[in-house]
Length: 141
Image (cartoon, rainbow, N blue to C red; front, top):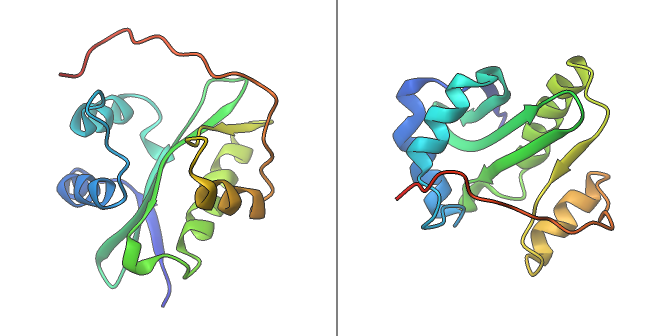
């Protein structure tokens, strides 16, 4: 099976949110609809979906502010994992970031999510010696 990768379209929203729920990417403090709406205002061409036979099976959201690229919401439907779709999504978004002049990509993975950490390591990502800090500017509730 081949995956067709294209930018997100508004008609994809419910399928994207359902996929994120299947993949346990949604947290109570993040409203997925608001995340989608925000992304559509900033670099929407870096919000990609992957389709197999018209079924949405993968997503990735990226951004680049001139210093670093960031990856969020990489998701592949559980029944479609280990078929190369995550690798294909990452290759496509990395290509787009590289074309934009992005010198380095960062992403966050929960420290106990060893399977996902290993996935990224197989793609050439390394664990940086940094501490991630965050500050919420808006509540999504």
